[in-house]
Image: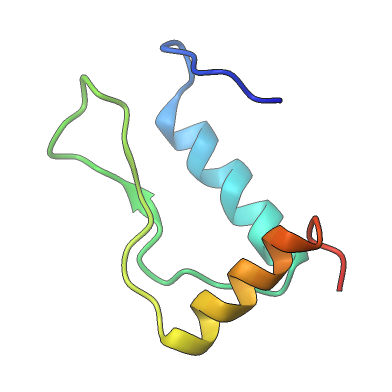
Length: 66
């Protein structure tokens, strides 16, 4: 279980998420760090096509195993 941490670098988090999504063959084209709120350390997931959202949901349900 992942708990909330204030010390997580948003750039490292973004790259970690990008790598995990890549393993599931999922690309979020707008994935990036939200530069508009650096104090919050937000990662912007962006918008995706409906079919990509469905593949992401399926990957999450199955732990990334396809």
